[in-house]
Picture 1 (spheres, helix red, strand yellow):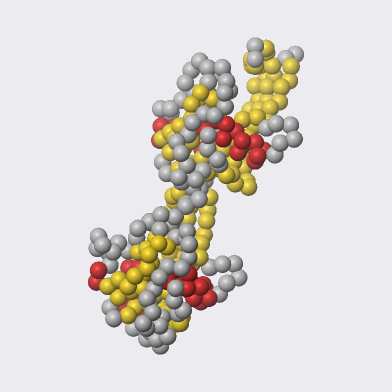
Picture 2 (spheres, rainbow, N blue to C red):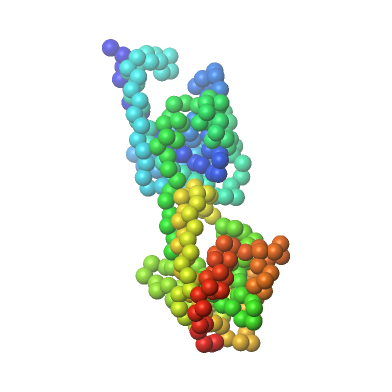
Length: 300
């Protein structure tokens, strides 16, 4: 009877756009080109989540984060070869969803004389259609993979004065960098959406505002890379309130290192031009204001 060998390993599926982070197995493992998920054996007493973070760094040089849940894959090879001897092998692989910062450097192998020869972002299409040779775990993990679902409720201010809108520009830290949007942001847990608008007006515009009625509800749904680097199935729900701000006070960005890098009064007729590219939220709010016939709140 062949000796029984059982191995516990942890891996990460790290997707960015239309690419996946993979590591190529070294000649110590196979003489053929073969790509795998970054990961490896869990040391005795090591938490599997810590193991996969360690392995991703060793094999790709990148610092990853991983989710709380995982898929488990089992492979039993009752008659195979390991390190020059015949064994009854059982591999248990824990596969997490992982992500790396959006500004992470190009991957490179850190470990010396290990099982990884190269690390690279590879096209997902090449993996799925079999053009790129991969171990069976890659296909199985991708078949079970779904982007992280993230639903975010945000509250915004619609402040119009003399044919111009108070808008903020999205910084490089936010999705849609360089475009102009309404002042506002995510509703904190337990926070009233009206209080969110007041807080965001202070943080993004340096202004104390009066918040009125709900103008419209807007939503977006798409999949993509979040500012954290995580691949997300994102659903944003946007509550847009009419609001006013005091006369004679110039708006200025107060928050530091946030998602806003500029604030300005933008002529409504200029929205969507090359000088003032605006988000879909802004256009939806303008259309709602034109068709609602609602009376603005008294000016602060």
